[in-house]
Length: 307
Image (cartoon, rainbow, N blue to C red; front, side, top):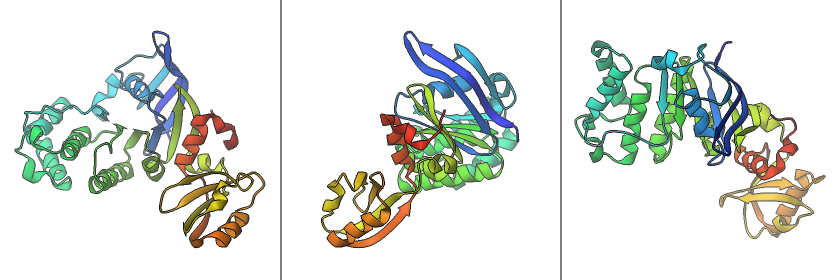
């Protein structure tokens, strides 16, 4: 399968700061690819270079088989992290304006507008000004302008920012439908739960460098399958025992536990049963959130080979 996007040893600096450092990526067509990392890691700079907004200092970029995004601009959609709609424009006028910018003739744009206004539950608001909408509704309008021209490649920079759970689920469903129809989505976020649910493959960037990349299942497999997820009632004193527990993350309803070196999950369960009322106990792979924290804090070597 031909790649939708290829980066080869790309470097970008601003004065003395190297924002992207020797980054190489291969993103297949028809997948959701996660570009993840902490704030300031270089994700947005990378996306801006892919879009041709910024030029790399060195290295090469290929987009949909072309050396410049400008050659395939009408086949690309972009939802920026910094939202930008004209506050006093009417919703339907904004959608038509962006359709025209992407070269969609009115006879084709009109039925597409109706389809997406219906799907995003915005028909009653079509003649309202942007400034009259909630932030979540504005986000849905901007998402429509990103996908209306049926692009082959879509960049989504923090697409769920400001959305409630209902609208988050709606955007998620649309993303999955687009991918089923062959669209490639590059999804930039620092929300690991969303990345874990949606991405086929990912690249974790830290300080401008790729520190971990690959298929999601492969990435998680590098970190073993000895984590425990425990739901319980009571006081779990054993969690503080460093001879038993290497680290744990308490999420309120449950706790994720990494056993100390050489400790089997069954030993964790035995201590839990002796101290608390166990509601559930599972042996799992590490969550992407745990992997993210481990790698960014310098523990990437625990996961084996990485770039």
